[in-house]
Amino acid sequence: MVPSIRTSLPGPKAKAIIERDAAVVSPSYTRGYPLVIERGSGATVEDVDGNVFLDCAAGIAVNSTGHSHPDVVRAITDQAQRFLHMSGTDFYYDLQVRLAEELATIAPMRGPVKSFFGNSGTEAIEACLKLARYATGRQNFIAFLGGFHGRTMGSLSLTASKAVQRRGFGPLLPGVFHAPYADCYRCSLGLKPETCAAECLDVIENQMLLQLVSPDSVAAVVVEPIQGEGGYIVPPDQFLQRLRALTKTHGMLLVVDEVQSGMGRSGKMFAIEHVNVEPDIVAIAKGIASGLPLGVAVARSELMTWPPGAHASTFGGNPVACAAALATITLLKEQLVANAATVGTRLMDGLKALAAKHPLIGDVRGRGLMIGVELVRDRQTKERATTERDAVVKAAFSKGLLVLGAGKNAIRFSPPLVLTKEQADTAVRLFDEALTDVDSRR
Ligand SMILES: Cc1ncc(COP(=O)(O)O)c(C=O)c1O
Image (cartoon, rainbow, N blue to C red; front, side, top):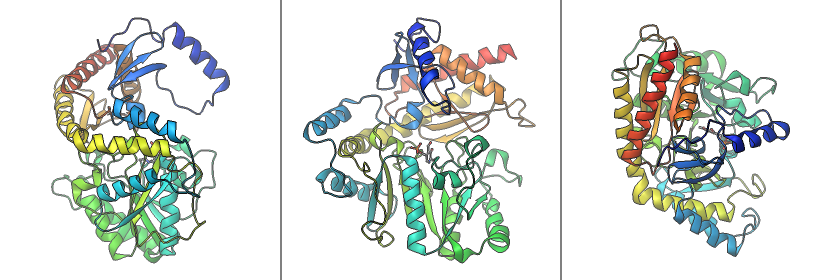
């Protein structure tokens, strides 16, 4: 039975683990509520006290095929019995080649591509940055306010999501310029997404490239096709299309960060496919291996000409992670990308319907099973309901629904892509109850 909450939260076993954690684990982690997992299956999670939750967080959009999908577990255990590691940077194994071949068939660009393997999203982005510099001989980058690309020094220099993520860590990489992202719910130009021409990008063309940084010194524009950490913000199609045109005009590369939006989550294999734009390089991680650590930078072959020794990572493309990725991609292609589209529509409709009842809901947006609900104190002023958002996330947890915040005042639904229609309806019901709870306390 999902959900099934039997103890107060956290229960006694969870409480004991959380106390031990506080003594020995880095305090930099952001834990919004006290979930201590014991096991997971599909879209459900059981905690150490036997409470069962419906998972609409998926380990931050990672468990694409659900928790411990039997096909993925089989692929992992089969490979683990053969060999665990042989460093694909110094030796060869078929699995890494097979995964690169598979990525070449699903990559969102025509023509030959090559893959560089790392272990995480941030490593995929670091590879994109180094490759963009190497291939263009240019130094600078354009990224977007609200964007999140990781936390190592290079990717952190692009990240402009929350000040705390950068505070105390400077100086960061020089030559990164941030432009506004197209947030249509809060369009500063007062335009409608259906009819706008992505005028927000005028800032890049008419200000940044004229007053701040010469276009011929910009290696790449790095963009999330749907902003994840920034609030699950879907830009209008024209935004990404115009960015493609602009980068082409100036000989810059277009790097698309699909770490969160990729691997079927949006209802297509990659979110950029919704707008018919072909990037030069794409960063992939999170959902690619259903939970095993893997990050990949996939680039047009003509760009990936760096010589032996130029870039590598000991664990990158680990064989067990490659086996998990191949099993994941098979499941995505056979069923789960389609499931993300159909169940995503159901979840989106259900969440939109809640707006009639809950004035706290300002906006519901997304694609597939990547859905954001933005909470506001007043629909006219759109004042951000920040504390209310945190309260709703906690109330949802207490009712057995796992969701995460995104941006200042949005809640993200990023469930495993195996979510069923019935589970989507349950998620809506629990979210409704959580909103009612918070409303009644206001
Ligand atoms: C769009 C995007 N890029 C990059 C990253 C960094 O990934 P990782 O935490 O695996 O380094 C994230 C993580 O949330 C992300 O959402």
